[in-house]
Image (cartoon, rainbow over all chains, first blue to last red; front, side):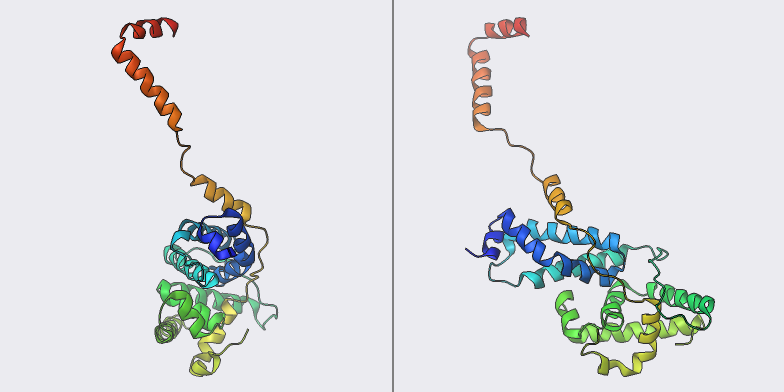
Length: 172
Length: 80
């Protein structure tokens, strides 16, 4: 009996092996979306808890990683949806200092605020496509939607952001 | 990490560049093993300990004994 088959039958050791194989990548994926290590850790635990709970629905010859990424993406999306707009995301200073740091910081803050004003599903698509530069196909697979839908969400996101930023007088 | 999307949205590069400045790369390295937390989460959800069948049988015998021999109830009360 192989690992996934034993997991599907509820074997905790098999689940632990799968967990150890995938926890790092699932965490990194969630981190790309929520950009906060504490929340990403909680969501990773939640993802694997859901995986174990619904093991009976998992086909032993199925794609465990793909399944885990889909659950993780949905949880991260829910998190983004519930996140208060004024919640501060940890701001990491860029490695290269730009001419006027105070002005640059203020401009970055405006962009972040405009971005957080977008609908959650658009935020996630834009984060993965434009900030993290993940392929559309990969984003579509993890969100369970067509690549064309990802493209249209990114397109809408860019259009909305441009409008917000123009209103805030931020020059892109 | 550059991927296949890049050529598809060249007209969005100004917005993309602004976003990348506002959201610099995050460290996505896992800092600790999450297995203990996951195990704890699984245990929290474990169903309550089930009462074994012989305990139910014993309780049934006691109830039957009280029904057929009510005087046992007095004896039982005396011993409590």
